[in-house]
Amino acid sequence: MEQELIKVKIFSPFEVFYEGLAYSLSASNETGPFDILHDHTNFISLLLKGTVLLNTPYGERNFSLNRGVLKAHNNLIIIFANV
Image 1 (spheres, helix red, strand yellow):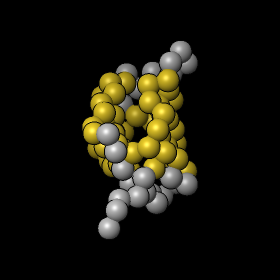
Image 2 (tube, one colour):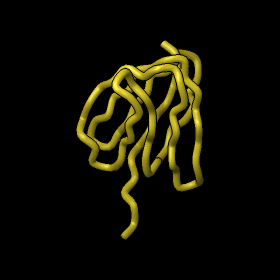
Image 3 (cartoon, rainbow, N blue to C red):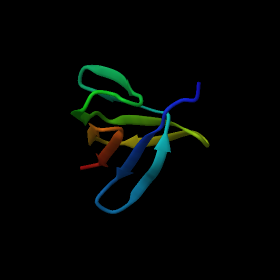
Image 4 (tube, rainbow, N blue to C red):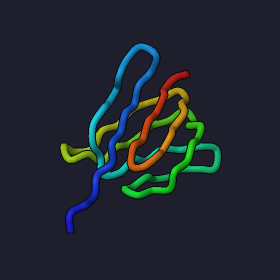
């Protein structure tokens, strides 16, 4: 069975870090590390300083953030970073 994909956009006020597809996203918030996969429940979270890990069709991608806001809604993940 083929893995389902999610759409991801990670950007700051001055730059787009990533915009594309991923199998999963891993990050950390105040309650600890978490993962997002296809059909994850909709939610909004403040991200802590750390690394966001994407598992994409082209391999793993890592992004270091000072902080951020993550919104997960209908298989679209948006991270407004370093705000």
